Image (cartoon, rainbow, N blue to C red):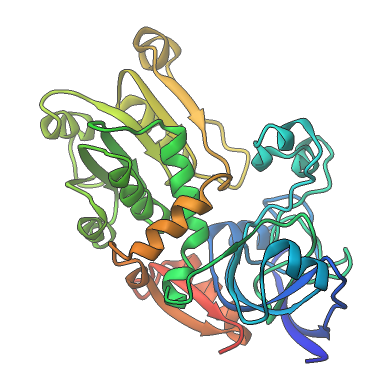
Length: 366
């Protein structure tokens, strides 16, 4: 290949299909032939201009594929060969800041765009204008330099299941941040793909009961396959807190993980957490929306601990292990598949939540 196709967000609300020269691969680099890339709500926030000004940007941060080309030093250092199945973490950490040295590379200072960092996220903040421009998964090829975090995948994992490795890694980090352990009662708010995957991760961490909370019955119904014991539909429930107490013998949850990405769900997450319990906020709202808590009633008098979980640092290894064991119906979450050139149609489907979409993916290479 001398050229490769990319989907490019050239400005807020503007999508182009481009064909561009394939990057030169240096000794420390590799190119990944993208086999699946998931469409995430964050991609829509990028398109709408809610997340900085990375334009032009090649979107897509949930990608898996196979090694297409690799430099000699990269081959030796990474132990990879052409054809190997790989997942690349979405954040390209600097490796030298205080946070990276502590292993907290998900909050690398170079990715702190709020405080002037350039941005280091594939498909979100790494602009196409930065050479060589192949920084997103909505493309036939992805450029991977030294410093990128690459994981080898078992080729026995089907591509549709492998496509969930990044959201599953996000889910595994949420569960770890919540400190979920043997015997905990866990509530997951948000029955989308990450919420369902978090239910499976919580079960694997030893949760006694897992309760899934949301507003759409068709999504809540999928929870049974991912370790969910009961569901609460907040749209039809007169009193979700009372319903939760009924399910948990009069108690509230030890850990509540919010992945809905709306302010109301974040407020509800705190109120569903028992005294001395932990609330994990992980759903990106995508804009500057305030969240209101009652300081005394919701937090202080109950000593609820509120933590954030951002991106997927440390989550890929347990996620890959879960995928390899195939104990949950991961591939069934992929409900829609589109060729690369139909990316705009796929994004519209996800935005409109039409046709029972759960997880839509692009197949850049067929």
